[in-house]
Image (cartoon, rainbow, N blue to C red; front, side, top):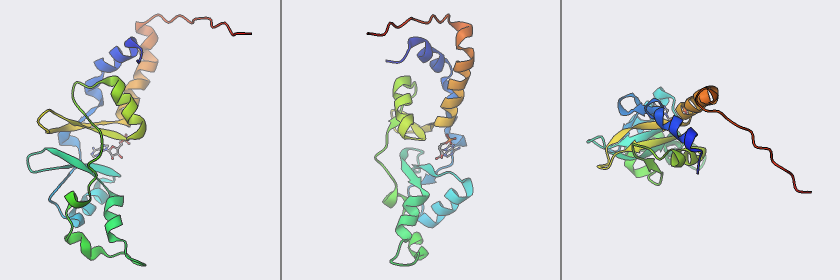
Length: 160
Ligand code: AMP
């Protein structure tokens, strides 16, 4: 369990750590990999969400998933990129979260994932929560905490 006071302050800041869907670079599951390669190169993110035509969340795509398909024995074969769809190589085994978030779960998940996709009940993509935005909130709390709460240090007696 995380401290209730920290959870409360983070919850109050929730909307600050969501990057809304319209600000998030994405590719569609039916795009070919050559298009996806251009998008990923242009936006300069390591990994981005994959959506369908109805803006439903389907998975994640990274540059390395694309380059993997180009690996030949001793050279890169780019010709395949116009034959393979994003949905054929995307990652689908990743956690997603729902708004309102379970803050404790978000903190745990962000240890291993640089960002989390926020998906509503019907599968619609609402945005992402990134480590960076959460770190900004934690930074804010670290500065403001003692303005809202009185903290008392408890003396710990060491066993002899
Ligand atoms: P950050 O915590 O800002 O470094 O972001 C972590 C990861 O989240 C990035 O490497 C991207 O994979 C993803 N990301 C962050 N912002 C965006 C965005 N606007 N569009 C797509 N992906 C993003």
